[in-house]
Image 1: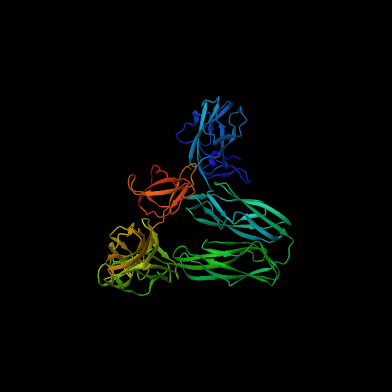
Image 2: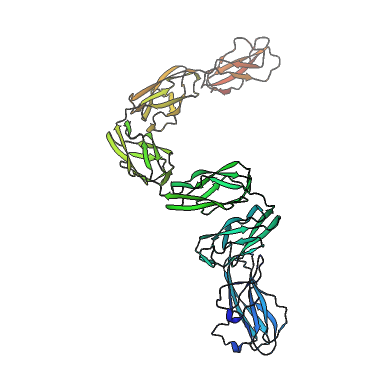
Length: 639
């Protein structure tokens, strides 16, 4: 439709062009005063269009009207759009526009990115102004500018001739103020209470308004419709079922109102509410809270309550800020008193600060050797409310809190434990305290600490085993056994070791060495006998232990090794046997070592001594008893 120019008084108030879901807005305006209308044969009802915020991928459309103000016909031959997110739709080009006639054009915006974008739309014609320019712009956003709760309304069953009213909460989701224009309903059996919900209405950021929608069925059966919000082009589905008129039941709520009293901010208090059907069964189709700080828990809708029966639910109150909060639960049903509301009140209060308790009330570490560390446990508890501990300071460096990271928050009724360490540096009593800085009412709570440093008692050096017996060991060879040195009571520093016999040696030890209290180190002791017979000795360790020189008994036996020299030679003819001679030099005196003539060509000398070199020669003996001269001597060295 089109309005006369004389009736136009605003450039921003949209007029509904078609009453359908997804409708377009028809915008009529005068030519700006700065433009010489007489010089323009083809004019547009406005020179600029601003779409505002539109969700990515969705399309919003506005209508403009092109008018031939001249005395001759104008032919519009083409349109040109500089940005593909905008389009001019509805002109069947070329279009001949007689003098004084108009044509509607749909201008659409379909954003593809999160930003403001602009464009120009140019209409080419044979008018005196051959190019007519329309400036357009809009902002792509990633969410609706207005949100609805609930996103759809179901009225359930409503008797023909009766009415059911349900609330819907509209919220401005934009970070700037938003103006809502008069709402429209689709479906003749749905309506809104325009007297109670005055429009146009400006909502600040995050602000909400409650709109009451009424369903009054005229015939039996399912009826669908919608609530349309111009501007953001938000459509809310509506559905209800008309039923044959019966005597409707009544819905009662017990108690008639709920007062939650004072509740600390951020915590939740609950109270029970009971719904009862009186006279006939009642179907509750929806329950809407007018304030987000009140919520109904555990209800599944729609629900039918049999006549004379009741169902109970919990209503939760979670204040966000200090102060009184009022609201209501609106119950839509097929009862004769549909729209029954339950008033709700409560007061948000700043939570009282908690208290920090320290257990035990003080710590006494008793006597502790200087340079050593003793720990005791301390427990921090929050009473009343949670407590955040920002820091802990020790007044003496000999006391330290281990394992704590700050700031830390302790929930109300909970505890956290840590270890406090005491490391005295010198002898004498030490006093100090741990101070706890927190948001508790008793911030600065201190934990007294005491302890006494003492000179450490000298440790003892023990050797395991107490003695070593190497048994029999061949002369000149080495056998090892392990010993372990341990510090008992306190650490021990071993400054040196000494062996009473060169045949016993301690291997792998570097002095001085310190053995920590309770720790051990191991070494090998080697025995290398130099001659046959029993060898006794000891290892002595000089240290700062209470028993400074600790001896380790050592014994072993050196044994000689039995060696043999095996001799063999080539046989001689016509002999009865052989004699074997031995000397200590190649040219010296040789002595026969076999007791009788040896009939064989081999002989074993078992009388040799270790470390000696011998020279051997042999003779042959004829049957007449005649003996040959000595053979060339050969040498044999015994290890």
